[in-house]
Image 1 (cartoon, helix red, strand yellow):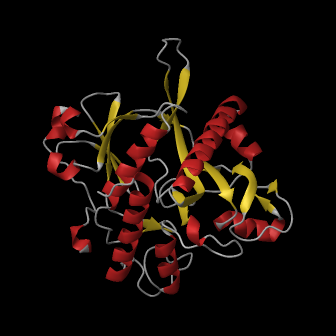
Image 2 (image 1 turned 45 degrees about the horizontal axis):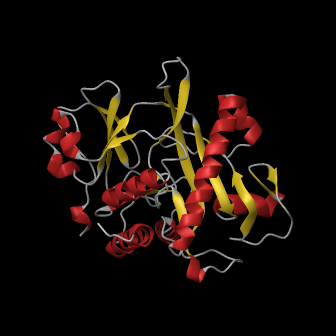
Length: 315
């Protein structure tokens, strides 16, 4: 079934500006608008798997659209339309490929930070806390256990690395020095508000939003003042950018079952992946990593389940 996955969007006649781990970004005939296409590629530990997960791009798009609408009162976003019939003429001819997985978005100058908010201590945050009692250099109370809810959500930015490089967890002070204290304060305020509202809603649907990553951009303000306006860009609160846990099974003191890529990460680790083997298994460098069909289907099932629990709808 993984043969039904869209690995490359391939839209002849459109200029491909960037091919990310999941998204292909194209120029359009409108210089202020970009076409975002969510493929079915999947990555973990900075490894893009050679086979994809069928419909994953459609799930990511539908979840992002759901959250863009629900959180529109918090901050403007780059989203323009997901209706291919409303997109520029050169895009419309690819309707069959793009339906359900494409968004027309405003072009923005991306803020060079990954805006991570953590409501629970897990992942790299837990690893740092065990060593030093801190997360991104921020001191936390003693005695926390893995997956415990934090007293307050934490804004813990990281650098935005080039593809193939690793994002680096940094202190708030370092982040503020990179983008300037005024912009940093706006990003932090927006990220924490978005997280709190999303986490509260997710809980009503039986999901714990443990942590998530936002990306922000700058566009000229609509009032013609010449100032820049902060907007939300990229995807929003998807299983690719967030950790969702089933609330009914929550048990602090260890790892939690999840609807994100942890299932794939665990499989990679069991299969022998470690840092330095990004290009393929031991002794087979350059071959890449291919998921077992059971892992493809298990991952697809988790993504669809997250969509249905959050939105009340499937694809």
